Image (tube, rainbow, N blue to C red; front, side):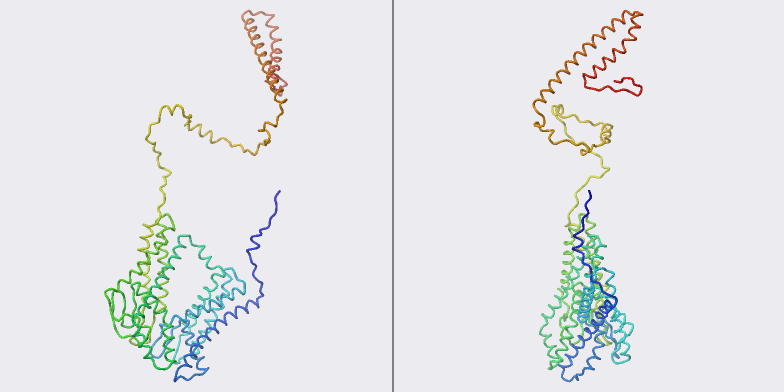
Length: 532
């Protein structure tokens, strides 16, 4: 009888999201969108207020700080600014990273409050935040007009929307299952390659940061002189320090490009591991990490990128038994690292007015190509050679080879007979297998205690009587056969008539007696005639 059961596991693991009315959902989305704009703008204004308050000759006013925060807020969204002297396109990446972190946390909080858990539900949060930032950015660019600092309204609109939308998507990716949707579409080999690519990119960026730190440590006296030359006031020193801190991610990406072999350029100054073109650089303490001249040992830094490629191949050596699959994982890792380096290099450089230090360039295309080669070539070699090999399996069409050995004749005579008839084997395979459940056998039948001793004795006596009757029947049958043979030798007309009427009855009686001795019952056919 079927039993209805409830799926208790599903009821426990599935959490029903809270129900919100349309007005409540709109209120939450508006609060998240406006809150991210206001908090970001307030943070930028607070930093400017701190610098203005500590500067010696600066005139501090709330209106001036709020108006000055507008172009700074656009710069945090990586929107290029224009001056009379040119364009400021090389923007600090640290404010952009902090702004994206703020927007991502706000989006995640809104998704948690609304109880969102499906990928399509994330679009409301992302669109609301991106729309708010786009509208505010475009409005600020329009209000700035043709002032000292300007911005293109269309660039401001789409730039603010792209940065905030990307940050909001990252914030709700795990909460709404966007990460699982992407990973589910990838096979295990591609997924492993994707993770290895991110690890390679992180390792290369870390190598760039280490190169910048080593350069600052090696030129620390020069760095101290540049800080001391900024001025005696705290406000100026704080402003220079914040400037260096804001451009620190840009310097790390430039160091990453240098370690990978692409290098970077600042105006007429070009720095690569294999080529160095010197010149004058701005008196910024962060730029003291740049090498002052070329060195014959500079190409040695390329060993770090090669080591990272070897590490990627080592991590992919066990992803599959097939060498081609392991190489495919390394290829995915190389493409992932190349795309990531392309995006980082594109955001790290830009125009720097129209002076001697314009432009600041990190060659994005060359960097992406070199990163792909550093990961793919060493990684593919290691993954191909160091990986496990699949076990050899005979093909289906392979011919069977008879082993070369001579069987002992004595052992062959004593061994069991093996039938090799193909027709007999096919007939045996076509036999129906009887299910053991079709027969009901009592468990006690195999036990000797099931029968009593008297039953055994009676069965033995009955068997002996049946054997005696069977022997007597055989003797009578033999006598009758002899009589029939004698009569055939001396045929007589009367005997023939008598035999024609007597023999059928005698045969029936004999058959009945024989069936009784064997314990068989008589059966009659449809015509009523006895049948053996």
